[in-house]
Structure formats: C-alpha cells, structure tokens
Image 1: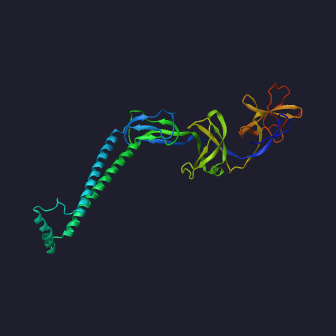
Image 2: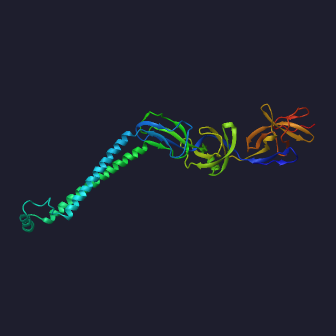
Image 3: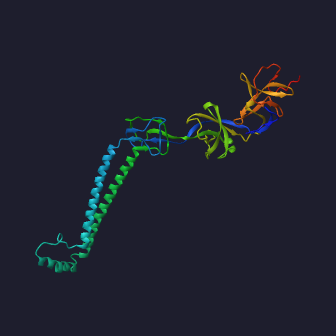
Length: 368
C-alpha cells in the first residue's frame, strides 16, 4: 500500500509515484478441480445422488447404472471357471497316474495272471527287440498326451478367469464415484434414462478452492511469474482483492496468440464458478507513469463528479479531479487535478460551499 505523508491532523500532502502501466483483462472464475463423468457402457440410470449444488464426500456413488445383465454374465463366468478348474484337476490326476503307475489295471490286457505276466516279460521285450514297438516312446507319448490335456485345462481356466475380470471391470464402470470432496455443478440425466457409452452424466467440482482463468496476450506474460500477486476485481459487488499466479501454460494459442494463466483466489471469496472477473497485469513494454496517489477517504462527490478539498493558506477549496485506478483498498491514483505538494483534507465534512473556490481539473489554484 502506498503511504501519504501526514502534515497535520486530518490533512495529507500529495506525492507522486511511478505507477507501472497495467492492462485489465477479463477472465472467468473456475473450480480448482472439475471432472465430467461419462457413461462407459450402455444402460439404464438406476441412481442419481443429487441435484445441482448437492455436496458429497470422496468415494460417494454419484450415478449408478443397471447391472442385472452383467451380474448374470458374471455368474455364468464363475460356472465356466469352476468347470475349467475341475477339468484341470482331473487332467493333473491322469497325468500323475500315467507317471507313477503306467501298468495300472485299467490299461493291462485281459486274461489270467500267467498270460499277463508272459506278455509283460516276453511279448513286449521281444516286440521291442525286433523293432515292432518301443515301450519307451509309447510311455513318453502317453505322458505328453496327458501333459497336453493338463495344459489345455489350465489355459481354459485362465480364459475363464480373464472373462470374469472383464465382467468385474464393466461392473465397476456402472457406478461413478466422486474422486474428491465437491458438489454437483450440472447434471445431464435423470433416474430412468437410458444412456449410451460416451454420453455425459454429471459435472462434479471442488468449489472450496476457486481460480480465475485468463487468456493473456503473449507480450504480457513476461510480467508474470508463478507465485506473484496481482490485483483483481470480481463482478460480484465490484470486489477488489489480490490473487496469486498459480499456473502459466507453456504454449500459446496459435490462432489468438494468447497464453492461458490461472490465478488462485483467496479461500472464502464470495463468488462462484462461471462468474466474470478482471485481472490487472503489468505491461513491461510501456514506461511507468508518474501519478499522484491519495487516500480514498479524501474524495468527495458532487453528483457523479469526484473532488477533494485543497487546503490553501487560510481557505478550503473544492477541486475536481479525474480518478485513475485503485492502487489498493485504501488508495487511488489521480490522473489530473492534483500535483505533488498539494495539501488536501482527509475525511472532509460536507457543508455549505460559501466561501469555497471550485476549480476544474488541471486548473491552477486561484488567488484572492
């Protein structure tokens, strides 16, 4: 804040200061975080958490679609997975039986004990000796066949598990949960509506923290840095405040040659998303302007004309002035009507104008 030097009670001496040239740009108040939920699959809306303005904590189900068909598919997938698991266990048992008991009764040839023994000790060795068969290769082929059956059963089980996971993923897509604490800012559907994949459902935003987004001409971006504070004015009640530069986008718009800049609003600011706001940004390409700065409390109004009481020796003269921009909550710049060294009255008490001299802006003080 620019201070003014006090000469006496209720009076100030006007001083001039080098005021950087600023450009006022319009912007829009936006939430710090905002998401748009879209339908991931077709279905009928069964649940809608609330209306616009309804607040919900994180992980609250905002929209739910009918999932009866998916639940039926899931039960069928579970049955297929159980069948595949049973087939795998059976194939594993058959493989182990062939591995540890290749001459089991189920595979032994018929006949009495002596013929069977004769076949085992004489017929098969003789057949192997003359090259008519190979017991080793036959055994390896049987083991490979049962091993292949076991692998096929395992792959069938994996396929059933993958199908179940796909259905579970679709079931998760039937509900839209709040990713953070916020409010519903806009809804596009009602309970009972049938939606298609990709159709928007609701807007959800965190309105506790607000920002102003402004498209800044590229030549003015040099005067900004993240963390810097600049004056801003909200459309609500013409409120003047300071905002902080939160983010400067790295690239400019190729058509408009502007850079998007976001400014953080103080927490608790009385405004809302979508409202209009103005931000003052310093223009480094234009030299600073020397202007007089006075407290707002020194201003008096005659209709729509602003003025100040100038203390000149033993009299009090009302001088009309041209007001510039507000420097802060207490001070304002003067474009014309005052110069450095003028002594003005602070907190003047309006009264009769008898004996007062009213001078227009840029007019020199009048002498008696």
